[in-house]
Image (cartoon, rainbow over all chains, first blue to last red; front, side):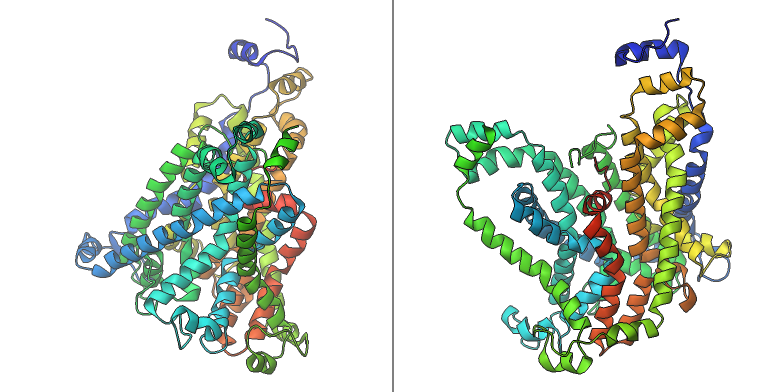
Length: 312
Length: 279
């Protein structure tokens, strides 16, 4: 047995530790509280939502099994498919709007100039506010009688200022509000990643006479490839949380123009009290979320314990 | 040297300048309106339109909002926030410590569970969470909000802490073990102080999440006594239909504590918001 040498090399330490196990090692008991807690309030619900999808429950009494009734109802219910389509549209639109903005802003904010630091700290302010506060603020802004929309709606093709009351306008409003709220977060990701790019690459390009645009296309963009994937996947998964914005801003309306899947589920569960059927819709959400989260783990390097924000 | 070369390439970037100003206007307009509207009387707001400069500055809107019970909502939110942050640390730290230090297979499996749990969409589980909470007779209580809020924040918290703890050199553990320290002492007097930055990040992240949380309060509480600020805003929005200044005063109050923290601890808040270790 060798005695512990504080300066032992890592590889050396690993080979000896298997035999001697010198540092005290905590057992499995240590993860028990967190695991139980997580299992009870997040894991179990995940299982329960599948079970509930085979029941009929109005939220008060006891859920009663009703076989495949909810599932066969799904087959003949076009509104779920509609919601899925609206969700997909909103997700893709939001991605298309937010990604270029966050990318450009992030690269810009990565510069250490004083004005950029000051402006960035203003740009990050929306991150501090709750979804409720943001949605309510925008709702007053979009008020067709007294808000900004009343003044400027006509320049956007809404002479009566009622942008949020028209199907297409409402969807556009959600995209804009969500961008206002979430672009700062993705800007942060891009800012941190851009700061990781070795300066020597730019120096070499400058010597070769490459201008700003070519440097961006041939150095910055390829170097940010992983971050673009991470940010995009986070955005896709995060699009499920747009529900809170939609609920406050439009409540799914007008008609069902912004009735995204989580909104549809919420209304089915907590307005119509058809909890069993709502669970079927929730399962679709779980399937979507899980598929996307597997993508996160696969691409973001979380599994390898690498932070995407190293060096922040 | 590198800096000099870069400077040489750096002509004034007009495109970026213009784009930045446009974005600044977009970001700041709603913020300006929150502040301005909340300082106006309703009449003045209705008369002068949204973009006018503030006239007749008044603080009566804030008094109004407090009269309507907003103090209570803020206190409730503070309780939920502190409880959530404390519980998150209490649960996440020993778990992360064991994940990094333990040789147990079980622990490795648990880590994988947390990784997968990272993106369980909370929205999708609100129905069974509602079922659980009502069965536990916790419906319409602040505890009901704290429990799922903490549970859904755990995966990321454990992950961030584990990442930080992985950087603590093995030799330090060994040295302290030789001095006769057990696992508890190793955690308390070595791992804990060595991961202070990550702990701060976690506490900020979980506190911010709890402060701004909307979904769980929405489905798990009902009464005025148990209302948190986000729900309070949502409620006011229904009540204050023509009182935009009052509504904006409430919005400002709801974000005010966080704005103050931002002023003094910007770095930690940013790291906490990004949810990844601030170093």
